[in-house]
Amino acid sequence: ETGVTQSPTHLIKTRGQQVTLRCSSQSGHNTVSWYQQALGQGPQFIFQYYREEENGRGNFPPRFSGLQFPNYSSELNVNALELDDSALYLCASSSGLNAGGYTFGSGTRLTVV
Amino acid sequence: AQSVTQLDSQVPVFEEAPVELRCNYSSSVSVYLFWYVQYPNQGLQLLLKYLSGSTLVESINGFEAEFNKSQTSFHLRKPSVHISDTAEYFCAVSSPLSGSRLTFGEGTQLTVNP
Image (cartoon, rainbow over all chains, first blue to last red; front, top):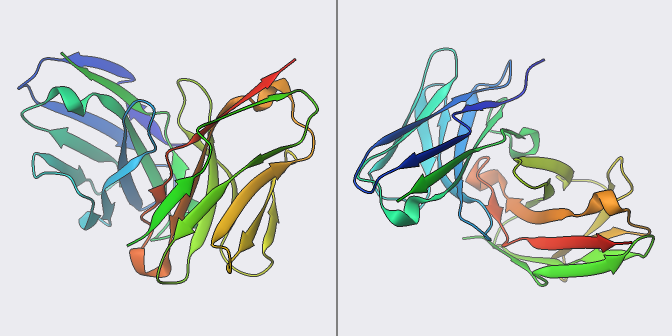
């Protein structure tokens, strides 16, 4: 049974650019959530996808968007990058809407310069 | 709305000493409570969780936490820590009404010294 895989592990972008982060869910999981973890802080909920539909969103602007594909993998897209977007982005998958069953990936470290 | 307060940002202890990491939550509905551990440059690993039933929950590596509804707390304890327990610990809350959205605290850095 594979866990949650995120790619890339690190990347550097310039302010104003766009970025796409990818997440492969754990086998059998149909729900994906994305979190932003700024340095020295706890993770903040961005949004969740359940069976390819957005199912809840945190306090993030519309330039943060996502997709979930039929195989339940997911993308997080961020447009018009700002310096404050620098953070560790974590993907978590679960079977159904079950916070107790979350499995987190190792994250993508995004640096905006 | 839900919130989590981790009362200590850093907790230094000596090896084999007991430790308590404190967590208080705020919620107007019933809650599920979690502790996650994060090692450097890694994602989050679930340490233990309270969903219902017994208020005392245990992990496989010696940690335990007790859900105290009257004090709205979910403190994490270990009677004897090891060097390998050095990590960042996050308390989190969700509820049946929030789906599986987790609200995290700011984290507590546990450093175990020899």
